[in-house]
Amino acid sequence: MRSRSIYKVPKGKLLKISLNYDEKSNSIEKISIYGDFFAYPEESIDFLENELKGTLLEKKIIFEKIDSIIKKRNIEFIGVNVEGLTKGILMCKK
Amino acid sequence: MKEQWRLLETGYSTAFANMAIDRAVLVSNSRGKVPPTIRFYRWQPSAISIGYFQSLEEEVDLDICKNFGVNYVRRITGGGAVYHDKELTYSIVISESHPKIPKNIMESYRIICGAIVKGLKNLGIESTYIPINDIITNGKKISGNAQTRKAKTVLQHGTILIDVNVEEMFFLLRVPTEKIKDKLIADVKERVTSIKHVLEKEISFEEISNAIKSGFEQEFNIELVKGTLTKEEVELTKKFEDECFSTKDWNHRR
Image 1 (cartoon, rainbow over the protein chains, first blue to last red):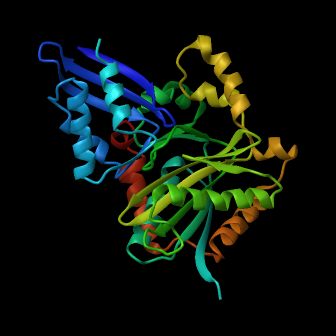
Image 2 (cartoon, rainbow over the protein chains, first blue to last red):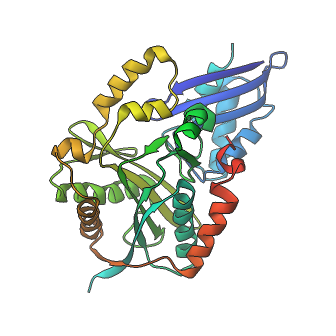
Image 3 (cartoon, one colour):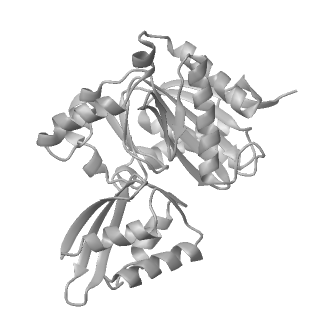
């Protein structure tokens, strides 16, 4: 299943998610994160997209996965945050 | 004696060369080869730059760009799509460890945008920095800014609108549907302004660049000394232009 979402992060930027997911296993196959936000270092978004493959499409699981990656790799987001990313991803779910 | 930084006035270049020069100066500064550098530049032909995380085809109407000879390029900085036409573009490159630049990213935006605010004031324009990355005057945006940090070095570049044609801008940038296009143009007209609109007269590029130069000198308490790109920077520019900014791989990567 392929789906997209556009989400304006409160007090932040416009986040656009493109998601391929497996309906049966309820998990992410491929995800692309777009938008006019900032992330330091920039390459961390590519890394995040990769790491999210196979993740269950459940709020708590996605949130904790992203949160642990940004903490582990010292990623700094501006105009987007873990809540916003989680919400944008889940908005893709039909 | 005041600390001296380098001022580069590179005039008009293509979008690819412009982005390559900023990156070349960043690399050169990170290697300790050149002092903190402020650069002023312009775009020929007019061009659209998109933020590092944006989808090119979603933001830019490529066919229309080709038909009208407008270039497009992906930046190494985040942020949104910008149509570069009648504007002064600046960049600043400085080591993250330099005492005059805050370690904190948002604080450094505030300081650097403070130089632009002072520069606009030198032209008689009152403006304010609004986080994350806008400078507004009378509630309308006059400058957009974007920062990256690589190799322990800060690069921030931004636009200062000298004049703006919103219809042209929206002709080139993608908007969701024809139906809301008119409304969007009306909205953006309300939100975007330029030096010409605020002062209700045309002033020369030189006058504007002198005012912004003084803004940087006031904000950072430094003296800007005119310089040129080093041989290494010229070579790096060529390399980044050929291997990165002019390539389909880079521009279409998202």
